[in-house]
Image 1 (tube, rainbow, N blue to C red):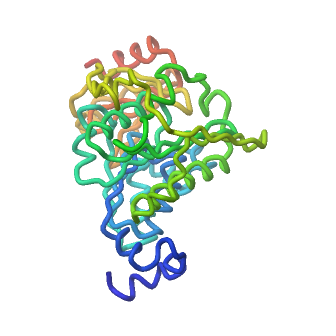
Image 2 (cartoon, rainbow, N blue to C red):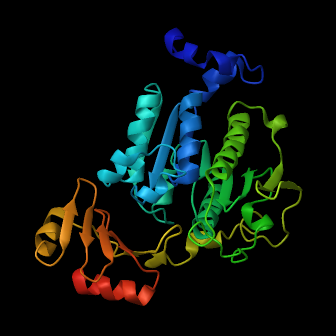
Length: 339
């Protein structure tokens, strides 16, 4: 690391547990952030400013006006351009620290796409909004022996933990699949400060791990309620003897059928994945006579006369916006897309 580039971290290096040696260690590390929404933008901002050598980001969605309340890397110009979140974040992050390698991917994270994303990474950070993907990350990380920094935020509540294969229990040991409250930011809302705190807790534990200060790791699943003014730490001491991931090593999320149709957290949206690419130019020509169509290099947005909207992505995904009814979404998709 050149002198002129390391000087930007002078205040961070004066923090004794990191120092210059720790800073040079950070510059050699690779982190993957899955989900570049509320949590993910804070995670990426901190890691890039801290000088982690390479930060890989992946997200399937694009920027909308309702994101700006809490997703700190985005602005109104990103909304106007209908930029994918990964691309908009990449642009901001490159301007923040040109010495850090930023690798952005616009894609849905599934059992088939995740292995390539995790190649050569030292740690995986959770910026997602649903437990289906979190359990997928948990299982893949424990299969590959890569630490997983979990975080979740809704309403004024947050949770975070760092799971380390071979050292700690996994997410399944502490949270049963399907045991969630069902509350999302779409149903009960979320305030921005809780997002910042959850992501900051995640990054602090990640920095400890990456610089080798493992003795300082918290070792708990921390939950808190900012509005209710309380906090609780659950010690991560023993794994469940029958845990299918970290004890039996069956990794159920890696063998589960990938859902073709899913609802997305945060708004009335259903995702349909036809699992073959869309030629956006071709579909623009097909639909321009039957709907209002807006094309960008990254997506095709179709305003329907029924009131809903369909957004097509090159990787074969379609978002049907304006409904959470799976039957309604399938009907609109069939009417306008067909295949």
